[in-house]
Amino acid sequence: MSTKQIVIGAIIALAVIVAIGSFVWLRGAGTPAAPAAAPGTAVTGGASGGSGITNITLDLDSYHSALAAAAAWKPDAALFKMQSADASGNDWDFTFVSPKTKGKAFAVTVDGTTIVATSTVDFVGGGAALPADLISPDQAIAEVRAIPGYADANIASITIVYSANARAWYWGVKTTTGSTVSVKATP
Image (cartoon, helix red, strand yellow):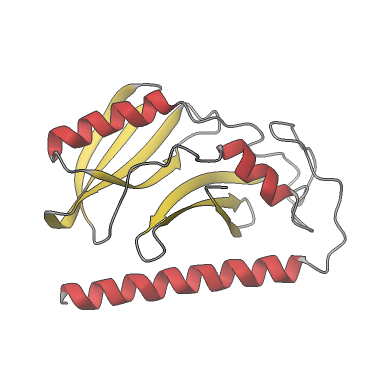
């Protein structure tokens, strides 16, 4: 499979994810909403009977530790994706790419500021530095909880992904039912 086919496939996959997220959001628009939770507030109940992730913060020191490891891999390494690896926000999985290294990425798992695992993985895509005006994971979760039908959603994970086509960052807030809602990661 050629690089062009892989890139086109990745763009189509991203478009499908955005379309599904829009469908889920529109489907929830007619559902009566329970009061939205404030950022960091535990919400109990919901479809699966638990609250899932209710408060998660991003310690930028985790990002800087991962970035230092990625820079040792390739000096031009840029972040493509960062995903919560636990409910506390202490553990994060990062994926870095290098514009000069086609077809490969560098995966880093950080516990606090300690690198616990690294590996090179097959990958096609672009990355960028985290923006200074990034909204917090809690703010992204609060935005999802403000959507009708999601006030009591149990949050399973949160991921930030860079869209090279849009040149923008998006939080993906995944619920325990499998739905993922996208939230623009900058104001």
